[in-house]
Amino acid sequence: MENLAVAGVDITSEASRASLSKMLMGLFDHWGLDSEKRLMLLGLSPANRASLSNYKKGAPLPNSTDLLDRAGHLLSIHKSLRILFPHDRHIVYGWVTAANKAFNGKTPLDVMIERKFVGVLMVRAYLDTARGR
Image (cartoon, rainbow, N blue to C red; front, side, top):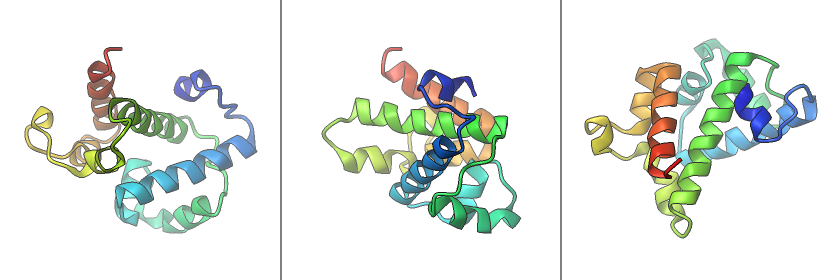
């Protein structure tokens, strides 16, 4: 949760967690992800499909360390892409689903789903390095 604290988000606030849920669902829309992939990225079971609908409507994310850490890293991935490609939204939103040599020809999304939380961290670290951080 340190990710979100650094970003200035008060994770104890239900309103902030509701804002995060809408941001994530919007990002997932831009990435073109189906419900199954959204649930996998959030570390949720397939039985939580109703939660996705609630999050899209602005229901707050639960105050769960794992879920909020994932949210922070996923939003950081998006932020890095916006910084790296400030004038090309097509690349920003398509990068996650495009094959990438850095991931042995797999898409960053494949890496994040196959490797779970570690995969999310790998993709974020790759982009942090590309940004020169």
